[in-house]
Image (cartoon, rainbow over the protein chains, first blue to last red):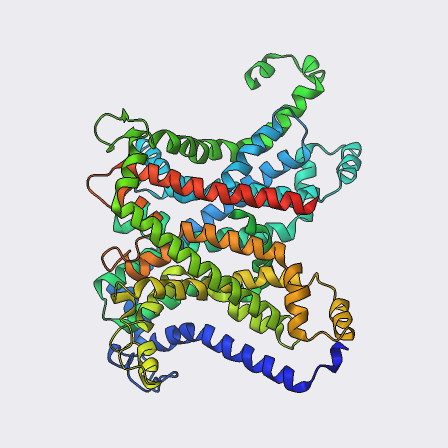
Length: 276
Length: 307
């Protein structure tokens, strides 16, 4: 029955999908195209989607006009550190919650679950005030601490560990492995896909984060790439080509990750859906 | 507890009660994360409740004012308008995103070739840097020479809207970008659900003489109800949390035209030389209450349907 669907119908579906996909991608194509144009040519009609004389110099100018190199370095540094702390401590804690039996465990976990439902925007102000009291605002450390311990990571990893049968761990215990041995030799190797999902989720979130750095970093030396583009837009608002070149640079790391690890991005949708 | 154990001779330690031992091992796994979580997440969450009942500017003494802050924000036209605007934004963003996501998922799920390409292309804006795509859309929406208005003029619309520069059109423009950025995410959610619907149902409908259209509205759509429910609620919550994209596009302007809830919190708590922490926190509590109600409804309904 399904196979008998008329070919006409199928053609229509393809046409619809192609049109929608092109329209969806058009802003990104514009970004790429404008990043290779002189400011005066960016808005010329008819639109030249592939610039005849690509202005590659835009990509070198952005590093000179503002501290773009420093911002990129800061972004890389923060993204790597926070992702590492988050993935390591979350998987560690998740094992405690999923496979160790002790008093008060479920109460502690309830605290994690409860905060998943609370948007960061609700407590960002008291969190910032606390950081200021601790002298941690206007430093990378404060931002690292506020981003590294979100409950979602623990929740996600715990879900993965719950599906690993207890019998497997019991067998390992009889063989003389202690809990730490079990974690490193059995659990971690078995939870690859979830680790990848969490790593990618954390990487994308921190790399793209805007409001956090905006609140926490006023001195120029601390700023991230996302703040850098904002700065560019403010200071050189009519340098259309350069703004697009900077945007492309900010987009590339996530785009590359997306190209190679799509599966985990898609998996992330199912699991981070709980983030709310 | 740890200190005590160090003083116990090795022989006794071996005989440590199994319960205590398990607790220590368990806590040792949890501690590295929990300590950070407790100090930097739990305390601020608790602090946010307290702060909403206080009058404080961060410099002078904090004073308890009871429900004053809540009374004040509901008398403050800026807050009430921000709340109203958030609702307007939510209604349109949620409806459009949900329909777009559903439509796309149905199209992509038709057993076509290159599914991966279509799916990824439509999903990508969701993971793309908000600031970068905001920068693009600002150019696309430019009033005088932006390509969107150039296109509109080309098809015969003589006075195209000023989009981000116009207080009437800024919010609709923001909604368009929101839908563009988030529809791919929810399309994936729907795709997951569609793949769980057995193909035989469609064959059965066809045998009964139902059209594809009838089949979709009578069979598929009702079967997708749990996903639609999830998509709608998630979208509402996202609407109430919206800030980054709007800030990049308009900074809440022109005037207050795109100032939503989180922007109001930001304006009172951060973006000022005379911060009103109590007022900002009361607004944050309203935000929290709305999200909490939605989450509870979601929990209840999901529990009922799974029983």
